[in-house]
Image (cartoon, helix red, strand yellow):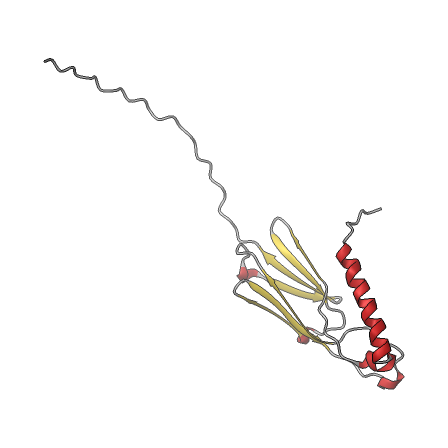
Length: 160
């Protein structure tokens, strides 16, 4: 069994979302609320290996043409849009829970990323961006030596 760190803020966000739904149902009504467009942002995982930093974003149902990845001033930007598909008439829907519309995420990347070799792949609804690290010069060992002892010049005594 995996040990999961308890995050009290995650529970507060969940409580806030439930309270928002409760008030929206009372004020707006169930049918109207479901058709209101909402803002959303995809979930992202970022991890680092010895040779690269990897960013994975969940983008199910989004075509490659609707995803833009841009790098400018050490900021990696993801933009895109999930479009609502009207296969059936809106009045035939019982519930709409998936989010639609545009999203925008940006991430600061470290200076040691080789910006010329960044790759992005989109497969099975997951966008994977590989940010390879620059080849650093290998550390060089510096040998510590003792300085040669120089003989002190003889002190001349001055006769008076």
